Amino acid sequence: MLPSATGPIVASITVTPSDSTLFSRPTRAIYVGVTGNVTIQWAAANTESFLTSEGYSNTGAFVAVPAGTTLTVRANKVLATGTTANSILALF
Image (cartoon, rainbow, N blue to C red; front, side, top):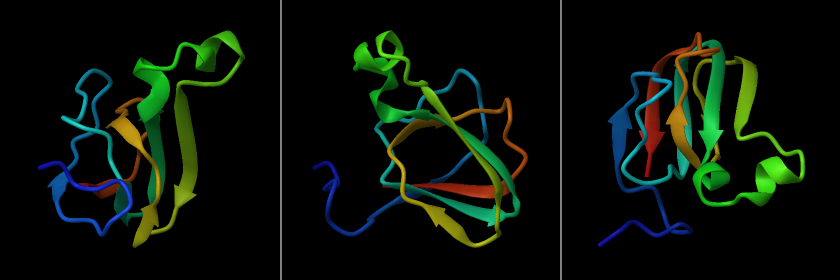
């Protein structure tokens, strides 16, 4: 059974930022343990062609994210390019 998109977070994995590796399912949130930048690919990037056709970006860059922050984002991956934060968890 897949975790609910609106219920509590029920699982996590340690993230190794990668420009190519996708998560098995979109995140509910991303936890940042050590301050830095986090660049993600939005979960809709692979399924919603309107994003680029209407000028939206497929990625999001969060700059100077403080340690201990939980970003409530639906992401397919955390990109190595642009990510300087460490101790990152993908939350599902």
